[in-house]
Image 1: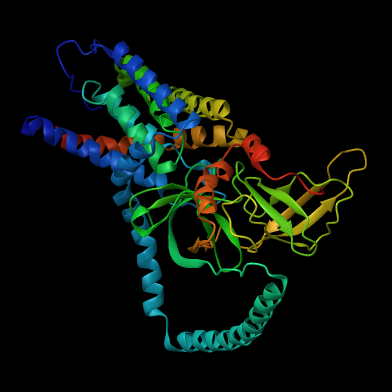
Image 2 (image 1 turned 90 degrees about the horizontal axis):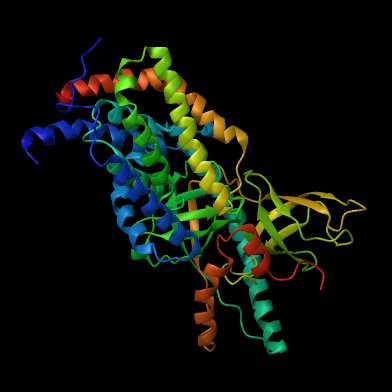
Length: 160
Length: 315
């Protein structure tokens, strides 16, 4: 990897690490279901901007780290992230030109897909789940998307 | 609007995307299957766990710093009050301890008379909770002791008030543990008043356990103290678990609806104690059996737990 490519990856890795930290930081009980899927949001952003460097494979590896950090079934978040990122990469040109509202709508459906896969695996593995735990992170994630996007836009300036 | 830098000449084509998704999906499914059905992935988990460890330490740091700050900036009068309170508590505990010593002596004597084996004392070590699992469907947490400290899978975890949970997955320097309130956790308990044996299942609520296998005529009332029965093999006997909060006898149902409140505040603990059960030397085979049993009783799904659990209630 050349120095330039390395310099380009570093900010992305940093934001992913921050997203992982936000995912494992303890929250009060009542707030817990509303924790957005930070890692999914971050990866969706980078897959949209740099689909050649950050696509399915890296998403899968980050998903594995997430599985170990959260103690879930190994491969569960890996599967969910790699499918979501696949859709994102397929749509990245479209998503780049979407107006803000439409982009939020597509992020909403991507997060819903992400939660669907996580829930599906939970269902197959026999982990009990509730509806609020499905929808709360999808809604909070969609609402916080503009903030995440503007912060990552800032980080992207350094990528260049 | 910022202009997006296209990655290459034709940005719409990402080569071999479909293949990569297929490979990742297949790998995920394989991993999940192996992780769920068998338990061969300990090494992978441990390897990735080493990468996650610094993250946990960093996330935990502000909390530790805050604790340290509040402790070091507490004013003198507050410290003196705390000291007075602790002194008073110490006097009380020592008084109780005297009684306990007498009782232990008496117990040993009686066991001698009965020709029973002497009870052994367990070894205990303090661990700190580093992180609570973010996943809302599972009540897991991470403690700061690992394989290097002799922690093993299925090890019992208590705090000052009672049983908290058990170790789920030993890492190199940290370990994943499961709370007794986790919906997939089942714990063999007995009523300390009359020795009635049953299972306490987690419900997903920090302040509630279910006792699903008690018949309507079982001798159990509100306020009964539940202690570990030691029958599952994972937990040593005699540690307090919960207090029965409500008993609902439904005439037409086969089982009573009994729920209990855990003795310790499961959502507020910060320091926990790990137990190394004392095993009598003469039955070495039992030791081997003990080491096997945690995987049996430990975080199985509820159905598994029902099978492994000793027969419910009254036999």
